[in-house]
Length: 293
Image (cartoon, rainbow, N blue to C red; front, side, top):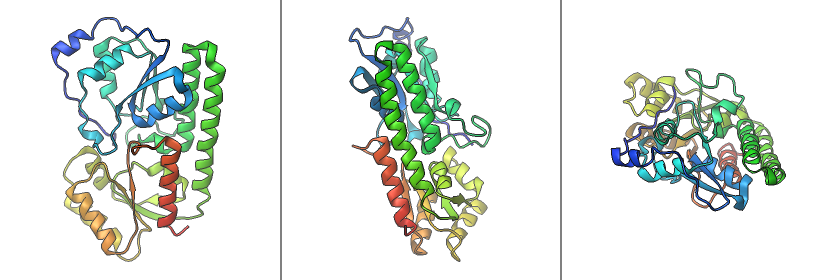
């Protein structure tokens, strides 16, 4: 199921103040707003010092489910030349802010350009930034749009995107080269595409992961079925989303640790000081270590 991040309504005053036609600052930069630091980093890598990027969700210690849009976010959207969102129900606050701002800036929606099967449909895993192939497509879309906004430097954006795309392709090659097959458990489907690329299959009951994603109580049977995965060598590891911990996920983690099953932590946004490539490299390092590769 798609993840919905609640949006706290902005004050009427703040909305009214941003409802006029957007006014872009006169500083010769392309102003970009990204829904998360993942997309913000991609844009910064491609645009370099010709772009100014605002990432609405940027703290890896924050649960994205509890994101609250602010008047500052509204102002950033109203001044943006370009918006990059995930889509697929993951960051609906962006569309709320766009409507309130009356923005006509172009919007790149990662789910729409991902090329993944079933994109946007019920049951689709919307965490497309964990798909290296999809992220390459987002990189290409960003470079194209920056080139349209700033034709004089289009070649520069393309060259930066090509270099980034090559690094991301190397990540996919490494994932596929781990040479493993087997079942794994997850607390949420966040790293699903990376796990698939490595040859791993998620066997966690859907009722468990859906409840965790939506912030709902886990059905007792789903919890028991999930805990049972850590007996009898049924799974190779547990992929744990450390940004959305709950009593149920902590219980699952403890069961894995008690059974001597490796736990690999994943996050939804960039850790402090990391960029996309270094972050995913660290994820692959941790995965390889857990699998003994």
